[in-house]
Image (cartoon, rainbow, N blue to C red; front, side, top):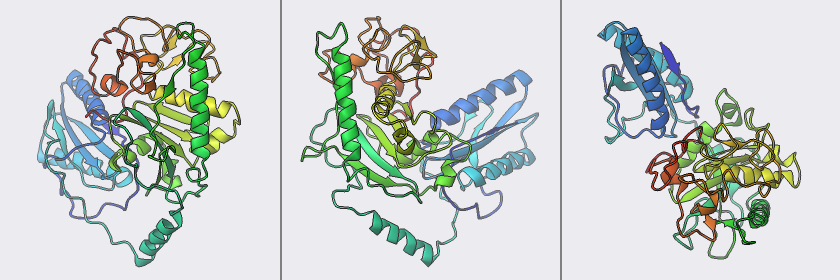
Length: 403
């Protein structure tokens, strides 16, 4: 028996009829389906070795969270269904606060991913005082020049969109409206331009990331206040496993965009290096990054932007577990240096056949004649001409789901 830990989200405790989802297959999309399937197949492999049967129940939340329980049994009957369900419900009370339904029986997945979502359990009504407090906070969050939605795009090109993210109880330092985020992003992009231009194969022509801009020519930054408290993000799970699904549920799921988030808080898991990045998202924990000062602050941001492109690549030279680089480099192991222009033979202009080259990503400009899309490669798993056998070796897995 193995408990599968899901993503922690805000909510109230489970209520409703006991055993409501016993023997009832689940229905509806699962935001973290890749994670759910990964854990399910691990358990399936174990029961096959033990010559037993497998009952798997799963609970999902509207914010992208999930919890589940897999029960190894000698036979499948009503009693053991109830046991698996009750274990799942216990986990769900902490991780999703929703009901559990059958995901799979032995090697057959019975959850209908294309069907309508099961109705949520009835929740206790929020108090008038709580609603009034939320409405008050929403009014306080309004600032001149602040956007609560992604603004209309000035082009249909691939681009990086920026988000200023706060917890439910987080202090608003106005990093979006003060221009702090825009200033840092422009500085980082200028560094990337200088670094890339110094590459021996660049002929002095550098590149920059394509940024999501407003029609007024300003960086498009969206303000998001989560319905998740700081305390919940500090529970034992990496915060990006909460943040990324939350943002997808809020509509930040355009496959032609990388969502670069500046969080106005620190976490237990994000304080040591200041950020985390995967295809197609990244998070910078600004209070932690600010402690590094200039220029290291910019280098950390650039480091995570490179991770949002899947770099470093498992098929590159000198890679460490397919995600970082051995030696002095901006993607160096346990260090961040300004050495993007030192050797450049692992993820930028490397000429390794069938291996992604950052210089040819659709998210950088000038755009190569034969560009590749990180979302296609790492999320949809469409290799195209990137056929290197070590392409996915230790690669930064897709956090955005496949579309």
